[in-house]
Length: 229
Image (cartoon, rainbow, N blue to C red; front, side, top):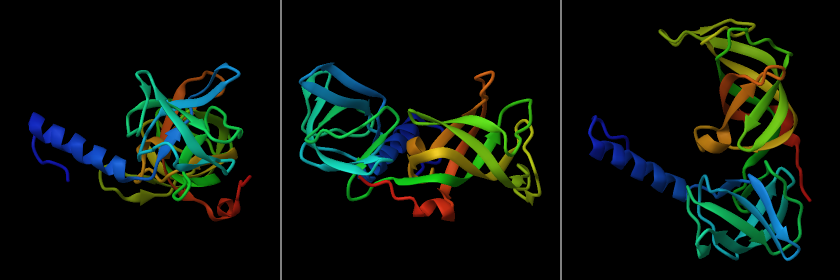
């Protein structure tokens, strides 16, 4: 429930309600760093974006699809019995499986989706127009892949919300487009999880951020991708 009012109490209520919703959601942690200080320790560090996790819970690493169980949850203050959204943790696993920076550790019974083609809303932020077919870097969580806009479905009139025909987007325009990436990535629809459903587009030559996007769903051809161990 969103509180209607400008008071600090309303803001705190909004934060608490949103945090409770995140705790109830399936577990997600994008891997930011593979921590291996010595041969006897191999952990995967990141920030919990949704859900809770405990030692013994079964997880799935995506996009590979490999599964294991949580052996330990390690934080700055020591081992944890449970981790919740917003915590920075290191997860160690019961099995030696491949996990890389940019992978997403999900709950095994409710994993993230995996796809290489999506429908997305894009907000264009560059003086240079968005051109279908031109390659960009797409950064989602800690993972960066090559992306192209394969098709612009329409742009949105921000005043009337009317859908207008478009072949490209100009500065500050918002449009709905089909996006293709060069390898499968794990994601959730933005309406379910902002951290695993939001992305930015980066110019490959200047490294400037040129757009921001919200993922809607995987396109039909990419729904048949099953990356399983």
